[in-house]
Image 1 (tube, each protein chain N blue to C red):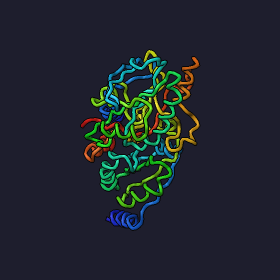
Image 2: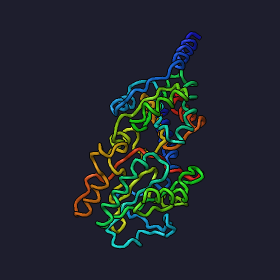
Image 3: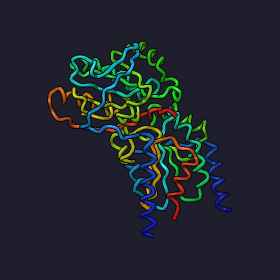
Image 4: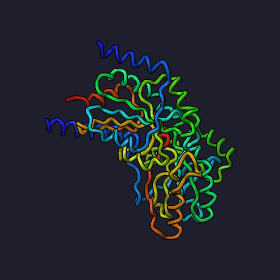
Amino acid sequence: MKKALFLLLICSGLRAQAQDIPFIRKETLQQWLNADTDTVYVLNFWATWCGPCVEELPAFEKLNREYASKKVKVVLISTDFKRNVESKVKPFVKRKKLQSQVVFMDEPNPNHWVNMVSPEWSGALPATLIIARRKNAVLFFEKQLNYESLEEALRSILQP
Amino acid sequence: MKKATALLLLFSMAFAAMSFLPANTGGGYKVGDTAQDFSLVNVKGKQVSLAGIKNAKGYIVVFTCNHCPYAKAYERRIIDLHKKYAPMGFPVVAINSNDKDVQPQDSYDNMKKLAKKKKYPFNYVYDETQEIARAYGATRTPHVYVLDKDRVVRYIGAIDDNSEDPAMAKEHYVANAVDALLSGKEIATKETKAIGCGIKWKK
């Protein structure tokens, strides 16, 4: 109960002001991919101009809400152009009231990090990686997901 | 416990493989494969095939489209590649494979308008059935295949290493590949990956 209240507080605090969008380099991504943790990372690669990405965002937001207490961390990794972070990404995040962590992938050459995410990834958007390092389980999707398929994938990875 | 982990791994691998299939049925070409020719209509209403292009020493096949910001960012560079390399025997053939019902901006009519407005010097053809994108294994725009004159795939990937800013690009992958082919040298980087708009497959 206390935890729920605490979460509610955090959420409402976040809602009051738009979140910052940290810039990350491939080293940060590598840390997430290799982190020795029970936390399951759901990494979604998107861009504000990508129609299917924008369509599937609510599914990730819902997942972030529903699994907030279950060691699941949703990170929305923007691959917009750098010059558009202030003018497009930030206003978008604010307008859509995104609660999941949004970061900007500050790497000019995707050839240096696309394979790191998954050798299966051609680089097309949207793409999603679900990774449970301690279980050595990884799921990768190069397509638009809905909440049902996302949750099904997460459940398959969470099951003991 | 170990068994469960192994099962989970197996399951997730199968799952991942399954999930990947719809995006890229058949897997497409790898460097060294021979690409199929095609007959697709260009923006002037003419059927274009690779074999029909005279004096070609090879081809720069670019899967691109009208609407995608990455395609737009590379538009000028695609025009420049054609202007530089077509006279040397490596013309650009640009292919739009996006489904117009999923992305109306990528309709054939809009291809015509764009090509006219931007004075495309290369053939811009329409892969309405998406058969060619599937055969090649193109998944995003832009997605480039450099072929030699026998249609053997010699390079697959990005045009260069900086989509946002051409001035900041250090590695000009496609130009380097074509230069190498023209001078009979080994291509240094045969495959790269880039972020791009997913090809809009028919639903």
